[in-house]
Image (cartoon, rainbow, N blue to C red):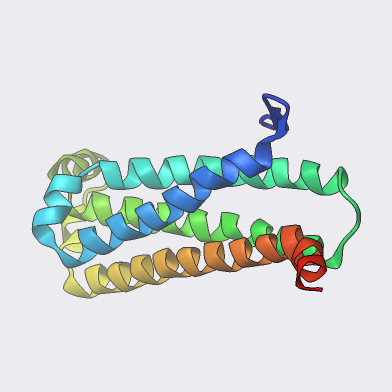
Length: 170
């Protein structure tokens, strides 16, 4: 699933940059769409598209990371990093789902499409309680995904640099 090396380098060290940029970008777009109606209209379908691209990059990055793990020495810090990385897929999937639901609830085009398929979509999408629940959930998973990226990055940096930093300090 995806490349393991790119131009002779482990793909993980390159793909991780896409995830580090896309996850906070998706969270920022979710926050803007939820909190600012004018931004929501301008962002439009870009919100679920960016969330989907993020969702695609996460398993590519984790797969290449698992390949890299099998080609390096066994280290408990690497195992911690790998475990945390595996959890990001759940956060990204949840962010994608809530971003898409939020967009669909506020997009006239999506509502018209759903109205033809689900007759009571107006009753559901018009309820303020549903909108508040979806907004809170979308913000929670978006913030949670950013926190998870931080935790993964911190553990990855420790795994990559702990031996070198300790030997430099002596």
